[in-house]
Image (cartoon, rainbow, N blue to C red; front, side):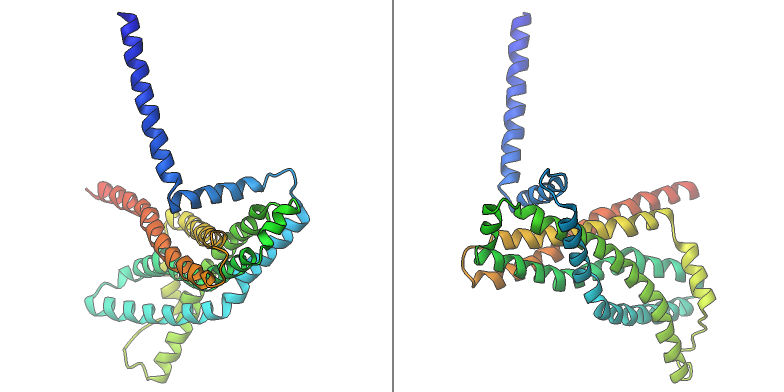
Amino acid sequence: MENAEERIGASRLTFVGKFFHHLGMFFMTRTLGQQVCLFFRAIASIFSKTRSFKTDSRNIILQTFFTGVEIFPILFIVATLFGAVVIVEVMTLMGKMGFDDVVGNLMVVVIIRELGPILTAFLIAGRSGSSLTTYVGSMVINSEVDALATMGVDPIRYLVMPGLIGGSIATLIMTIFFSGSAIGAGFLITKAAIFLTGNALNLQLTWDYLSNEILKALTTMDFVLIVVKPLVFGCIITTNACYQALNIAHDVRQVPKATSRSVIKSFLYIVCADVVLSLFYFFDYFNELSRII
């Protein structure tokens, strides 16, 4: 009787093992699974015995500068205009409806929680992500990646890891700059528009009122996700960009195709990741409702 039960248990374990084996193989043969593997290989390369702190630090700093500092002018302009539009729309709409007490909440939701991180990630994916794909893809076409491997240099550590770390750091910094510019510079643009139009919109806007409302609306989860979201988006952009580049066939005509795939898929992954991360706010909303009820 006991032997029969043992055989049945073994057959169940074998079936479960085969199921997860096939599931894992199915995932690993898909693009998303291979990108996840590339991400973990890049993380593991940080602890490689052949690492060079000086070279790695230099590459990371250069990648951070390229991804963040060089994109700042266009990001500042987009953030300023976007913030001005949001401030005018929110103040006008809420003033007409008599909901002046939710101005801060709407500003936090639109700028800090959702559209600020997403627009920043889109700008970085469109500029820095596409440039990274073109750069690494050109190295693949010219057999420079193979040359690195021949010389004993790990291409993942030399190319992907600095982009991963530098891109994530730059995305975090630029997201904070975007939100700050949208609120601060957007307020100045709005005040200038009110002055030039003679307050045609009939807006009573002061910095003390706007800043106090936003600070009151911020929650602990906002401070957590304002760090987590950009880091996740940065990892997605750089990993996807490097993956598309490293899998280019040895044909120069494939470089622009890989670049367009990199941008489009980065947009898709960013939106999907934002939906998943935003689920944390739903739990917060449910907790608030439970307290009220």
